[in-house]
Length: 85
Image 1 (tube, rainbow, N blue to C red):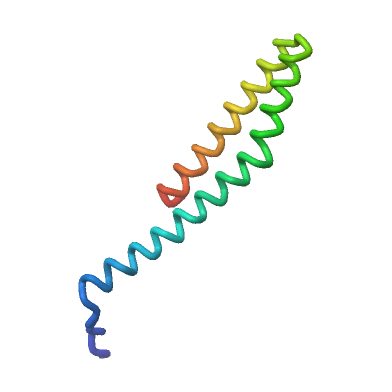
Image 2 (spheres, rainbow, N blue to C red; image 1 turned 60 degrees about the vertical axis):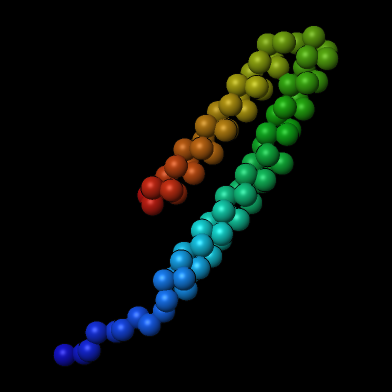
């Protein structure tokens, strides 16, 4: 039978490891949010503004609702990641 591994790291070192992992997770979330804003929401909101300027509020409303759906999708994915699914 193998002896148990003795963890000689201090509580501070263990806490630092957890914070480092949390920092990596936060960076990943920020990167995904940035991509979502740049590639999906900004173009849709620009289209909505254009539609308002040319007096087509129904198109603007469709674009804004699409943005809300994108945000919901993003938040659902983040919740799944947080829950470890």
